[in-house]
Length: 194
Ligand code: UDP
Image 1 (cartoon, rainbow, N blue to C red):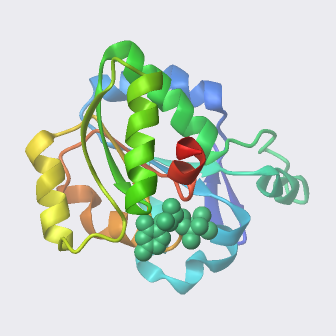
Image 2 (tube, rainbow, N blue to C red; image 1 turned 90 degrees about the vertical axis):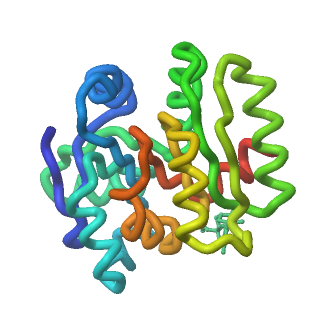
Image 3 (cartoon, rainbow, N blue to C red; image 1 turned 90 degrees about the horizontal axis):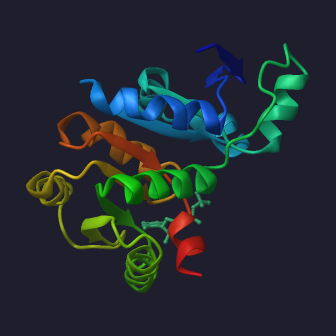
């Protein structure tokens, strides 16, 4: 996989179909998968957060999120030809999880938003096992949240706290969480819940 640097931030040259084609191989292996969406806001501001920068540098996938990334690439070597939005990727991962009857954990968004997101996913993807969910305004400590996830060991973890909170949280806890695939999804639960 090639990587292009936009404003000093690594962004991988990868499409949605590439991601979905390699997912089964990644799940069959040992390595965790971390999909980080790199949009213009993140490209502009990530360097203010050293822990977010090192997460981006070590993540398995830095996704070109939005047409702004394609345009920025055109000003350079033009390797990034297609955007992959976080919500599109999340929907594809939900479809995959539904086909495989996989489990997932949702963390973030307002209590009513996450409750509705759980309902919508339950209706639209009936084979998915929703192993748990915690809203983004909980009184639970970060350690308690990690413990809750590790009790159920889901395949997928979706984190929706907005930038930079979700990336900072992943930087602190990603290694300790017993799950296989992680995605930072920004406002996606708000979209899914309608
Ligand atoms: N959010 C959260 N906890 C917080 C702040 C934000 O769960 O302390 C959620 C918010 O409810 C929304 C998501 O994070 O569902 C994205 O928030 P925002 O729109 O502020 O971020 P952006 O999409 O601009 O990254």
